[in-house]
Length: 306
Ligand SMILES: [Mn+2]
Image 1 (cartoon, rainbow, N blue to C red):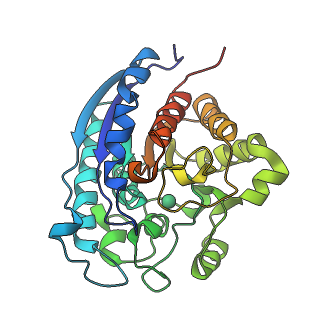
Image 2 (image 1 turned 180 degrees about the horizontal axis):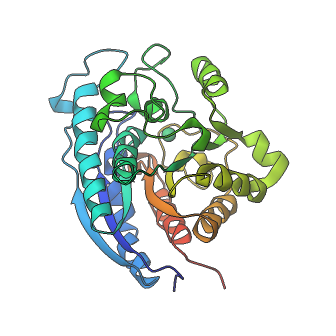
Image 3 (image 1 turned 120 degrees about the horizontal axis):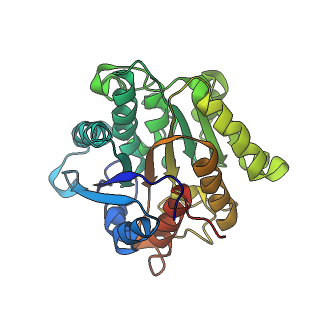
């Protein structure tokens, strides 16, 4: 049994328009099939599945600008997600958002921070990822919006995406932490250095260990905030343990490091909202990565070994 029993609202976002490879739209199903609701209820939580956000599929849409591919349908899906996250939080539940590609963090973070902004509060953001997701339309090599969502949340990039919900930025750089980074584009490197976010690369994790890094990350993201939005891209985990993601990068965090991070967040942080994104069943092995997402959700929500 988890120490803190929570009411949880699961929200699926079957969106792959922000990614370069297809298939991540099946992520919410893969995570549900792996037993998400059952496992969380076994911990004593009350889980309600709110179903999926309506999203367009690539076959009915035009990509439009090569610098912001599928902007309009991505914006529409994120607007709906923002409203659903706000609704779930207004009902006193923790939003657990299942991606979909990482562009869905635009709406998820807009929703969670918007809920708190109405109460004069802000949230910190902890972003686990192999990548920076900090391109802008000016720097993007691919035009894929899942590579822009962190920058958007910090107030940089396309005006409509940045101002979704009317407020910008959604989070302050001083409360924003990236962890597990090992593959950055040139523009992202510049952005991360200048923006004021805290970035722990794989080298930092190698040298200092997950425990030390997470301790500091929780302090940074919690400082002056009402809680932490956890956005977890499964590609932060080494491809040996998480083969089902579209942009695999070798040398990621281990299975145990990922669990330790989630366990520490449960014990030492106030988690306000959670995203698990980029599970791609088309590229997976026997739904290993969907199962991993469920296991990490359990650890973040109070599962202990002893
Ligand atoms: Mn990402």
